[in-house]
Structures are given as C-alpha cells and as structure tokens.
Amino acid sequence: METQKITVEFVREALPPRRADGHKGDFGKVLIAGGAVGYTGAPYLAALGAARSGCGLVYLGVPSCIWTVTAAKCVCAMPFPLPEEGGMLAERAAAPLLERLAGCEVLALGPGLGRSAQTQALTLALLKTEKPVVLDADGINALAGHMDSLDARRERITVLTPHDGEFARLGGDLTADRAEESQRFAMEHGCYLVRKGHGTLIATPSGTVLENPTGNSGLAKGGSGDVLTGVIAALLAQGATPVRAAACGAYLHGLAGDLCAGWLTEYGMTPQDAAEALPHAFQSVLTQE
Image 1: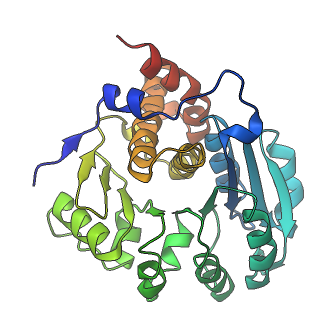
Image 2: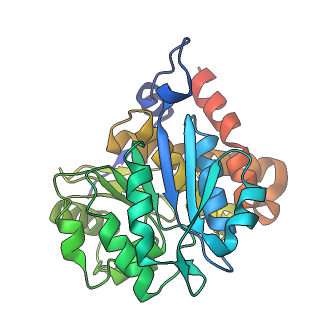
C-alpha cells in the first residue's frame, strides 16, 4: 500500500507553538516510569529526549534501588524512588505513580522496565489511566496475552513504539506487507503505532500510514528507542496531536541521528549523542528554507 512521506514542511507546521511569555508549566509535564537493576540508562535517555524536545517538566519514577544512580545522572529531570521487588518496579508502585500522573499530561511507560509478574501487573494497572500513554520496550511486552487492556483504551490516546520483535509478541505478522499490517494493527486496537526500523511507520486508528525518511544504522543501538519515547511524550505533553507527536518525534529523532552520523560516523555515535543533537535537529527544521 502507499504511505505518506513525512516532510520537513509537515514537521515545521506540526510542532507545538511556544509562547514568548510562557513558563515551564505551559510546556507540558511528562511522567516517565521505568528502570531496573542493569537498566539505569534507559529511563535516563528517555528523560533526556523529553527535556531536549521542549518539555517544561520531566518526572522520572524508578525503583528505589537505582534511584541514587538515576538522580546523579538526571540533572534535566526530577527522579524519585518507587517500591521495588527483585530490582524492578513493584506492582504497588502504581498508587504513587498515578498520584504523580494526576498533575502531568502524559505517561511514558516502559524504558528499562524489565520483565516480571510485578512489572506486568504494574503496566496493566497504569493503562487504566485516562491520560495519554506512550508505551515502549517492556511496557509493550507486558501486553502480550493481555491485548484486552490495550483495546480498553480505544477512546483514549495510546502510542506504542515497538521494534519488530515486540510487534510480533503482540500478534503482529512480520511476514505480511509492513505498511498494511501496521495499518491493520492500529485500526484493530485503536492505537497509534510507531513501528520502528528502517523507514519507521506511523499508523493511526483511522487508517492513515506515514513513513519517516530520516535515520540511519547508527540508531540501531540499544537506547535509541528510549530517546524516541521521550521525544514523542514531550511533544504530546506540549499539545501536539498523537499523529503529529509520533510523526514529528520519529522525524526529529532520525534527523538527530543523521546529524550525528555526519559528525561522529554511524559506527561511533551513541543514543546519548542523538539526544544531545536534538536541538540541532529542531534548528534545522525551523530554519530550513
């Protein structure tokens, strides 16, 4: 099937406006939940992606056992400790997270979360929120066998950012036409699907499928998807529609990766480099003739 290419003109027009007299409360609040022993980098990268994409306030809930490490890393966000079990977030972390989420616009759930019965129960509990959710990594894996929890959010905003392995765990057919299968999934489950990979696809519940032209193999490294999650969540929190947040997020993240490849090569660039290059990607979009 034919897809719509995301253009720089689309991104420029779709970016949330910034008031000259605005303050940090005007530019959105994102709550990120994730992290585990051995996965302290993922929530940090998501927070960095959100902070580098214009978000006013970024909160970061992590297991208490890694909180000091996260707090030392995250000067751009506000980490706080949560109940943990076995080095991962416990189900009882749901209550403090929902309390914090009441004052935020968007929940980004999954970076470095880890896979356990506790994190799965936590994910399913948090998906009951009315707030928009960007679901990534093990937040997505927690839906395997529980697609009813996703379907129950049909009237709410849910953005999923799977790579092909995660997509397959949710019942996606990797042998089918990539665009058609992405469209089917998004329409069937009423979600916004950001199917990562070469030519990342954004599929909407209405059947629209957009294709991202930016990015390169230097982004094919652990942690890149965490940065993308933060970018999309930040744009959503600033008032972008889900399709605009997803499309702009994919384009800007890929463009930041392209800039890094030019400076550092696809071999040497890291996900943190891509996050740090986001301001240059925004500048390129906003100033390009």
